[in-house]
Length: 105
Image 1 (cartoon, rainbow, N blue to C red):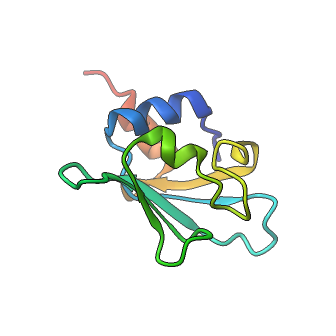
Image 2 (cartoon, one colour; image 1 turned 45 degrees about the vertical axis):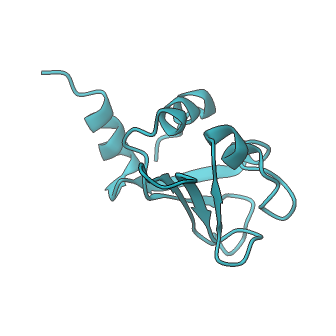
């Protein structure tokens, strides 16, 4: 499975483009519990994350708030990025999503 660079992922998240329903787990989690995050245009706090330290997830005003919130055992997504394993984005496996993002006719 391919790796996704944090800067590229963050640019996509910040732009709110083709990033909803991102499924991931942390490689340092022996149970590989999946987490979800995304962006829903039109909501007061469009950035959201589920299955974290906050019961029922959390919503954020900005992508910066989302990636810097200490909501994974007291650490942020940015802090734990080296352990992130993305399973899929927009309902696609990561490789397929990345190919769609880079497809040029």
